[in-house]
Image 1: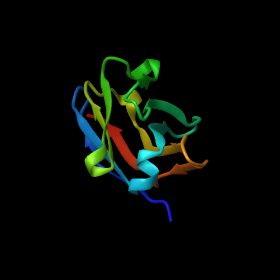
Image 2 (image 1 turned 180 degrees about the vertical axis):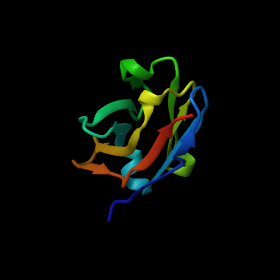
Image 3 (image 1 turned 90 degrees about the horizontal axis):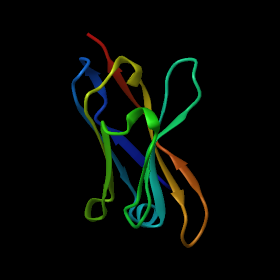
Length: 118
């Protein structure tokens, strides 16, 4: 059973920072493009950032220059460092694994809440 377990969400003031983590099973992590998506109330889920197996990163326009995505193969962990947070960043953040090698599959974590408010 594929599991993606997120952690690191919480309440932070505008301008603050948070780091999200997502631990995946080894087989899925090594075979997937990994990404973070978010969904705010009343809005569609949107891409925050993704990173392929070779380390190429892609960011949503609204987070460029503020967020950094990375992956640690030794720990099967996906990270999202979020700096200069804004109230508009408030959303549930989801970890995603899209299998690109040796099979197919699109897997999601349960989500972690990020709230940016004073």
